[in-house]
Image 1 (cartoon, helix red, strand yellow):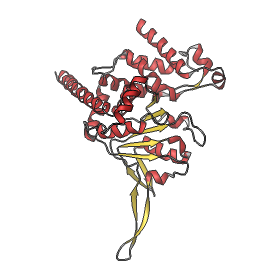
Image 2 (image 1 turned 135 degrees about the horizontal axis):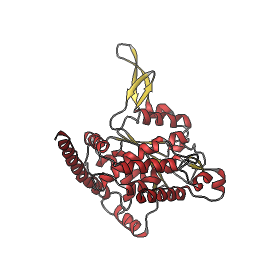
Image 3 (image 1 turned 30 degrees about the vertical axis):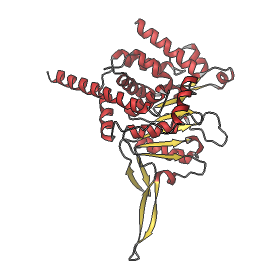
Image 4 (image 1 turned 60 degrees about the vertical axis):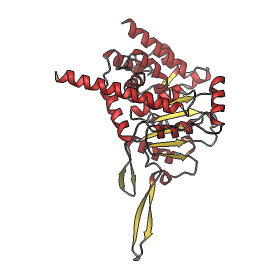
Length: 338
């Protein structure tokens, strides 16, 4: 009986949260036009308690998206423009020596912009590896250490970083181990003609639409707890494990294509990300549990930045996204036939 009561309570929480998320997406859509999948993935990353890497050309609305998300989710937000001369202290903060009125001198810590609930790290690959590491360590540990003292970051804490995939001169590409810290990589593409027309008319008129808060920090933390309690069927768990392992070239489950073209595959963190994200995706779709289709749908944003093609494969023109898509299709087909 107690178990049934707990299940009913969770069911009610999932349904109430689903309705609230519908309101949040409607509020975001007043300012972000035609980027439904990008918004969906960003929300899924936040519901999963993780960080997201936005890949796209300048002018596609990445900054506007982060600002709108901060407003709608009721979070304090900061933005850092990454440049080659940016220092770790410019992000984390530093201690300054102050002189009081009585002549006494003492150090005072001044918080850096990282002390926000939603941080936009703009063009993260323009900063030096040392500065990147300071941010990525904070992302992983949810705390910073300055002058030997550890300070906790606010909760919730999310980083949405952007990267320009074209202009790579003077940049410091993120190492693979640091890319793995991002729950998802979200590709922001050009809009189609009709969407672009709508964007142009909506953003060049007399007054632009204003977003409003639907969540707050406490509500988001509660939503993240609901996501982690959402049940996941054994079939979905097995499919996730099969998919991640099939993308590793040295695994017996890997296809000849993966063995021939992939240099290294995703680690266990990819499976953890998929488990969380399929739950969040189900919640965003108004469903009570994830299914097999969610795994295939999220394979690209979770796996693409956690594996790499060999030099020979790149020279042959092999596309990593195609390898992932074919592997996901094969694994899903086997799972459905079983």
